[in-house]
Amino acid sequence: MLIALGSDHAGYQLKEQVISYLKSSGITYKDYGVFNEESSDYPDQAARVAQAVKSGVHTFGILICGTGIGMSIVANKHRGIRAALCSEPYSARLAREHNNANVLTMGSRVIGPGLAEAIVSIFISTDFAGGRHERRLGKIEQLNHYQV
Ligand code: RB5
Image (tube, rainbow, N blue to C red; front, side, top):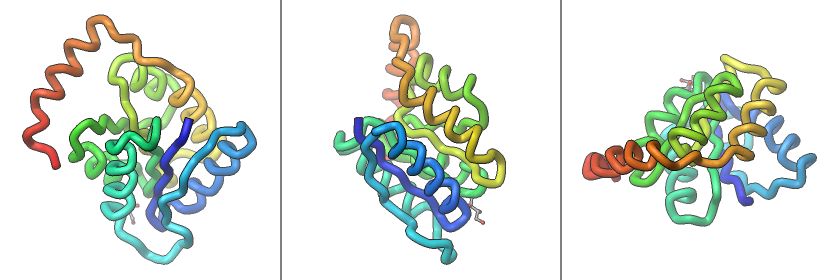
């Protein structure tokens, strides 16, 4: 499994903590930045990670900004990307089981590192349930002419 990670300045610290967790769990990742806490624009990293996931190089993307909202808005503009903003593990599990989400977004000003670890852990280890959810995802796909 190869995870694509990205954050803006607000999410930088939490991204580093998520990276420590991935390293200690033996999960491979690629960090698309940012690499410091200088002010940056979240659409830049969100687009980079979304394109990388869309290209098929990565199984999942993880995007972190202050709230997770901006990252989610930008990532969901990309065809084939289903980004889910999660602040607790239950939503993270259902984002995978029901929505087949391939990008997780989180807010560093909303949750701490312990919760982020739990969310990442369940997100990357839960499979899509398929069945009736396939039909619903098909309907989402039909709306893709609105996306880049
Ligand atoms: C940066 O101040 C903040 O706006 C950004 O990290 C994010 O929360 C946007 O959605």
